[in-house]
Image 1 (tube, rainbow, N blue to C red):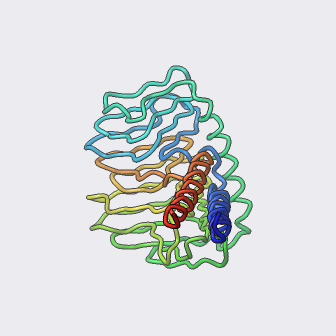
Image 2: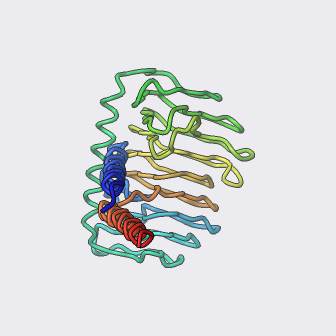
Image 3: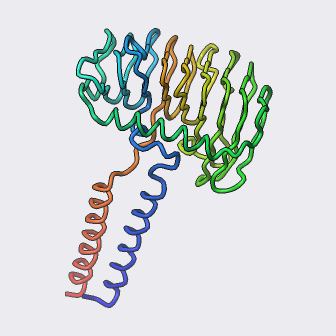
Length: 294
């Protein structure tokens, strides 16, 4: 072994450890637990068709989960799977989900429990900042630290108006809403935005008792951040939202609306494979050096 080889192995080991630490730190910034695996998740118990996806040709990039009831799917492409907690769940006449349809999926029950826990957790973190205040015009909010939690009554934005959250790539933003979020029509693009490097994966709109309604031609109303409405409807008619929509009453993704799902996060097994690959690279470099000396 050459003198440089141990140093190279140490560097590669440090990279593996750093990546593993990053994976742990960023895995669940919003405390969503198993709910984070779904782009669209219904956690209520009403039955019927609590998720309605219909014309024309909208899409969901990710998984769909239902704690109860059926999925009414017409002309909507789902790139992930559809999971039903119940054994009797069915889908409509739309395209077959790329990941298939699965019933009796226990993970949906866990996702429901985790989502309900998350809405309570973040509500208790709000500390009553901005109670009784509504956002009704273009507004910019800036992070106050690693985690920023703010409370508002309503968000009501019309044509061309934005709420923009500003923060770094590692910041977390949670907006507790005690009323409704309403996004009106107009030309693209407006709605709930992020800036300054803030990731939409680190943003949560925690609607305590109200609903989200987004409308406007060409998906002009946009939502960058997870929407968690345990007691209210979520409606995109149309609109664009990413990375998650979670509701306890009803979800409508209609008139060409789209949902961009959560960003894939490396699994622990992937980290192991990465480590094996790095060690293999170190071995290849060592063998090449030996060959060059002969």
